Image 1 (spheres, rainbow, N blue to C red):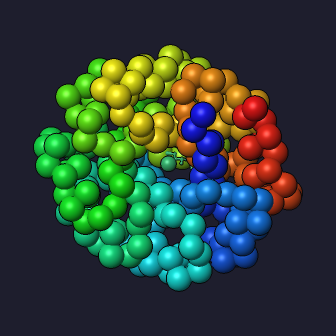
Image 2: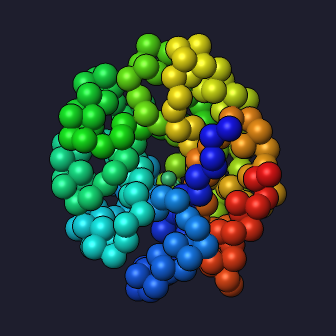
Length: 219
Ligand code: DX5
Ligand code: ZN
């Protein structure tokens, strides 16, 4: 069975204590660090850009899982890769030439991910699934942390798993939004093998323990 990866989302962290908080999630056994990039256009919020990714890169060896919630992501792929992104995920809804964008991410040497909003059919990935390394299923509408989990994402995770299986491809199936110790188990059963969690980790009193408990709750 694929091991489950835990990817704490720094969106819910205390940015001025980020260096220490990253150490705390590492101590808890976090696998990746999830970085949410928002441009105020694709989503109604603004967060971080390449300079912050570069600063984070200097302080951790964890793979940096960069989730681009931005319009025209092609313009910024190189900047995020140079800043240290290991995985670059773009939204299907933001890419007119998704195939080209995915090829570009791979040329840059990163893992290529494609994210789907809750209302975007999984079937839209059927002609590109063989090209991608990661599918990110949004389990909230993108833009903010701390929102309520949308249960329909479980069916969608199973659809992604089936799609990957149909082309005999092993991919990361990532779920993002409202993941905590009450929802983790069911999304893993549905097919997720990477869990993003912001609030359920960084907003807890004991950040290290929160990572450990989230992993425990998967099984
Ligand atoms: C939302 C972001 C998420 C967010 C998840 O648009 O993509 O990564 O940080 O936050 P929680 O875990 O609090 O729902
Ligand atoms: Zn995210």
